[in-house]
Length: 188
Ligand SMILES: Cc1cc2nc3c(=O)[nH]c(=O)nc-3n(C[C@H](O)[C@H](O)[C@H](O)COP(=O)(O)O)c2cc1C
Image (tube, rainbow, N blue to C red; front, top):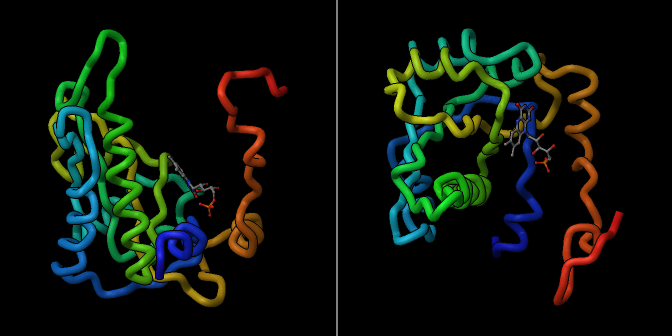
């Protein structure tokens, strides 16, 4: 698969089934993040790969809201975390979220290439996640990435609404709506 094919194939699918996660797979995902650029090469990204019980099951049961119950069959949840002072802070510009986002995008795309679903979520209890993975207070949890395999039919955990979104990619802004040539102009 070339990059365009991976970008096109990637979807935040919710109908998941389990897949065996090996330590080699985790290394491959981590190596995708490792190659990404960061301000001053600070590499502010940090990940807890949660693949074993009891932590994985407790994360699903206690840190996720009902709307993310689709994650129950997932085989791994990656806790993405960092803190501002791991990266450049230039006056009011903090770069850590940008750099962590780029590295995590690389993980998501590499996972897609490996035939996995890698679905980032903001719907979780940060306090619960922190407690379950023993993350110190000084770090911010940026996102969780739910890893599984796409189930060909609908899993028992997805709602009717989620079934619809599973069939077709949610619509996007047109390229002209979010890009400008040479200078900014008001588009709305
Ligand atoms: C930061 C972030 C947070 C998200 N949070 C959730 C979430 O809590 N639950 C969920 O089902 N999907 C979540 N998503 C997935 C988005 O809804 C999905 O990426 C978007 O609708 C576009 O669909 P697509 O990725 O399949 O193209 C999140 C995605 C991102 C990047």
